Amino acid sequence: MKSILIVAGESSGDKYGAEVVQEFKKQHADAVFFGVGGERLAEQGVELCGSLEELNVVGIFEVFSRLPRIRRAFRRLEKEGQARNPAAAVLIDSPDFNLRLAKRLARDGIPVLYYISPTVWAWRSGRLKTIRKAVSRMCLIFPFEKKIYDESGIPAVFVGHPLRDKVKARLTREEFLARHSLPPRAHMITLLPGSRPSEIKNHLPVLLETVRRLRTDLDVHFLLVLAETINRDTLDRFLPRGEPGIHVLTEDGYEAVAHSDLVLSSCGTATLETALLGTPLIAFYRLSPLTYYPFRRLVRVRSYSIVNILAGKEFVPELIQRRFNAAELVREARALLLSEKRKAAMRAEFRHVADRLGEGKAAEGVARELEKIVFPPHP
Image 1: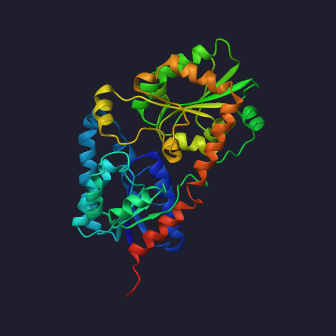
Image 2: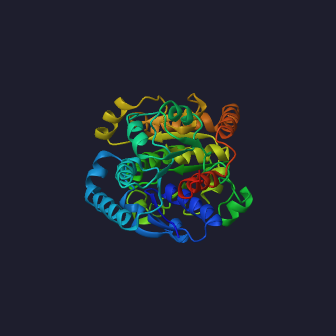
Image 3: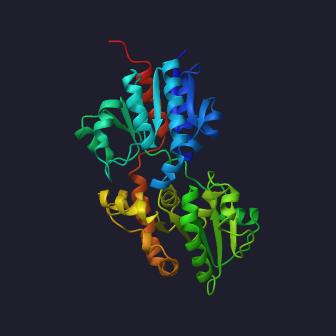
């Protein structure tokens, strides 16, 4: 019976990791997985010795404040790895934690499969040296990454993006409106403020002011999709319950996006999900100045949204740092919302982006690569 370590430090990694475990167990039902993750990995029978909340941080000061907890999680995994001597480790995203762990595992002779590459194409390309030494196989979700890894002499395979065949709305617009008791209106705008508490803090005040300004002369439903990682108490600190004109959703997020006329989204996976659902989009992001300015000097790409990066051009408006303010957001939202030509052009670009993400079934590809490590073919 083979044991396998798996580590997911974010909610998306928890979901993608659970899909990999499920696919792997279809062929190897007796495999035992243990590690760090959330509810999705637990549902697949993974024995959790740590939670993803311990690792889910962003920004210099948030990392510093959580360092003791992060160090405890690292030491715990280090001990578990040495005690159990797993046949392999599957590390998903979260490079600040997982690359350090990969080095330790490699020293202990444990082969590492890394799923979802660090953004070495955007910044900190020096990480490729660590990856070359510590990672046995890299599973890539963006096609342009393959050339980088090939040139660096690192075994890597493009498995496609895990969202490619997963992002779908299952309710019609009429069913969605009825389910949430929303009367028909001229427009519907969905707000995606982020999946971390720091993102809610940095983004929501600007979004609320934007809503108040747009509501003065537009007939609009405003929907706010609450990420799984954000509890209602966190939201309530910035969005008073009963804020007029904003309907908070904890489910049917894909339907909200798919049936909206416009989405205002924090940069991140949510922008790609929005593109796959074909809804016109404005992207934004704000970090603390002390985190942003050192970060900006190190970044080698001009765009922040992965949708623009995949397209090779900035066709989705991006409002970053100082540009992320209510006046700019209102101006961009009005211009896009009221222009059928711009919305149609954006949808066409979204289709091109989707075509670059493979055919789906990424988890199956990762499971196959893991199988090659755990059960190497005999010479």
